[in-house]
Amino acid sequence: EIVLTQSPGTLSLSPGERATLSCRASQSVSTSFFDWYQQKPGQAPRLLIYGTSTRAAGIPDRFSGSGSGTDFTLTISRLEPEDSAVYYCQQYGSSPYTFGPGTKVEIK
Amino acid sequence: QVRLQESGPGLVKPSETLSLTCTVSGDSISPSYWSWIRQPPGKRLEWIAYVHSSGSTSYNPSLKSRATISVDTSKNQFSLKLNSVTAADTAVYYCARGSTGRYYWGQGSLVIVSS
Image (cartoon, rainbow over the protein chains, first blue to last red):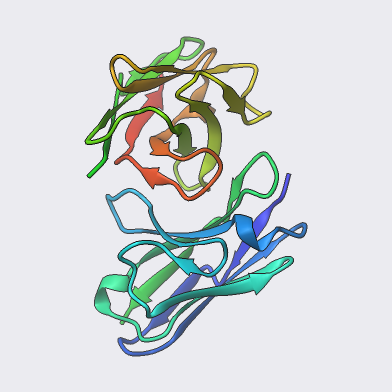
């Protein structure tokens, strides 16, 4: 089973700042099978990025994804207050399909 | 726009069977893949299983012996049964469109396992 580790656990930044979220896999994952989700309190997770770097429909261009092999990154270029949420990475290169523990982004 | 809604008992006794149904509205359940994913309190999301509208299935090996996923195309629904539940099965259960990734999620249903 591929284990995903996310860092940091919590990120506290001001509006307009840049957020860099990391996800490391215990084994190499194909870039085609790596996603990022956003979850706000009381809401379902929402797909942000699929295939490592492709934004899902309706996702602002301040969200971007990159990476390969075992190291993947989600970047929020200019934080908005509505970006306060927990962000999860997910791999589906091999079964069972697994998720990271999440990074909580707080807006000061 | 497609909408997914989970339904089922919010409280299940230990050793009994957890049963959840996901009703899909705004789109046909066929042809597509549909999944169940859960999140225990304070823990990470866990993929449980997926089903194709044709009936083919795939399971997380850790739950395969206890889980059954099925689809009812006539009702535009798919379901999950998880038998022999314990407190460790307490979680928010999400239904989602998709098989392995790129999920579109329902709102989730909290299921507590307790006597």
